[in-house]
Amino acid sequence: MLVALAILGIALAASMRTLNLSIDTARETRERLAATWVLQNRLAEIEARRLFPEAGETRGELVYAGLRLQWKQRVVETPNAAFRRIELSAALADQPDYALAKLNGYAVQTP
Picture 1 (cartoon, rainbow, N blue to C red):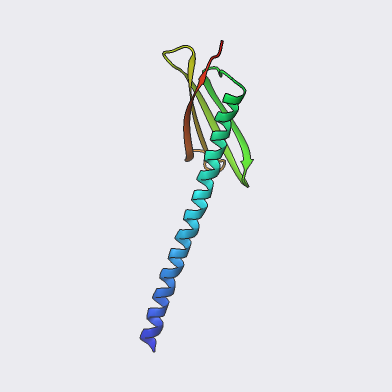
Picture 2 (picture 1 turned 30 degrees about the vertical axis):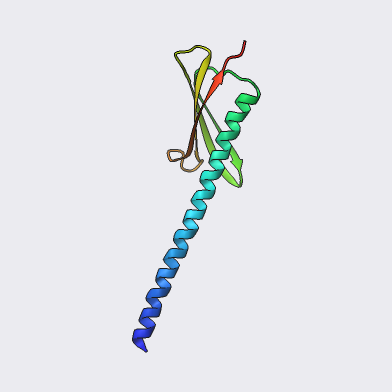
């Protein structure tokens, strides 16, 4: 009887560990997906407004899908003056040094 209880205890502990890992993975996937959507929205806004941003860095913060996210936009000049490289990253506001998502794109200057 004691051996059976020990085996049951080990099995339940392993099941709880697996459940916790699944919950953590689901949470992280949700955070990464929301961060990716924020960056895609930012890039789509630049394209839709036909913006040609100046070289430099811009930061912002917003609540999206119930998460407080910080985004960073770095605009870099390219060898072709009609193009600018846009490097975007997003992180949780309370963990700004850990990027959940990164996205790169280009802005084109239209005549």
